Length: 118
Image (tube, rainbow, N blue to C red; front, side, top):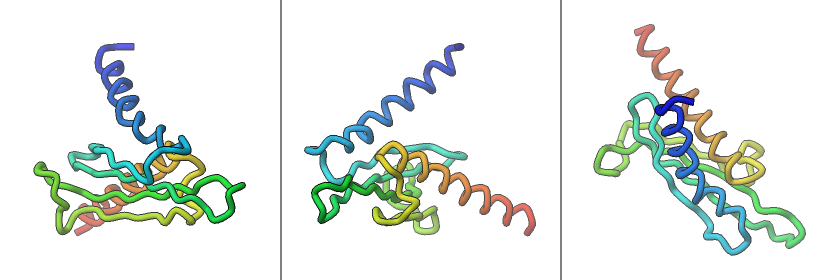
């Protein structure tokens, strides 16, 4: 493993640390981390919602919004959401994070495709 790969793995582990803590029963209801994709800054928020039935596991949803260098939402940037009860929310917080990034990647690819056809 070269140095760049090692740095990427360490950065990913550091990003996932607060997301993984959401699986703990006493964890807060949501966490937001910063991700970069295709020269875009994204705030990825993972939300945990406990069901009314105490025997059921929590549901996880996500939100991805594009932000500027100052951390403020970009008015025409990406803005994607998944409700915690939706089937695409994820079975655990880390699954929800990766699903959110896949949705963001698909949206960015779609935007690039439209721009190249114009």
